[in-house]
Image (cartoon, rainbow, N blue to C red; front, side, top):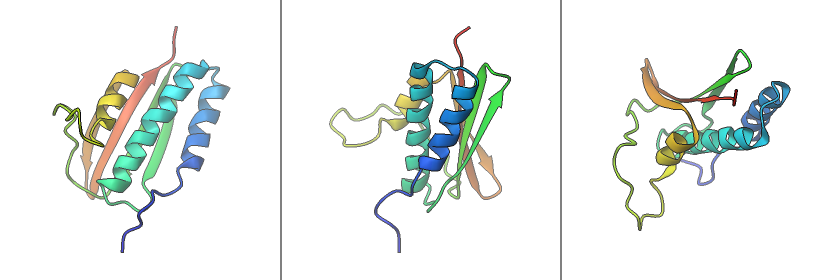
Length: 122
């Protein structure tokens, strides 16, 4: 049986916020990173079938953050398809692409890793 509400992502969000705050990132970029993380996390649960997606946050120096969300579904996302303007969903990956500097997905032995990178303002 599958849960109808997404798993709690607050720990991942708090870890991301803490890492970026310690690195003195501006609040607007922290919020962008949190929103992008939320989109990938919910997608991993909703479309990837992961009851509790794995999140990895890596701060590269103090200027770039890379966030990866892993699930068990091997199907890679296709964000190039235009979203139906009347659909209730389908815009999340477009949002991630617009909020971040780099975005992609990599296959894994079991499932995939969807990631984004965001650079701090110079």
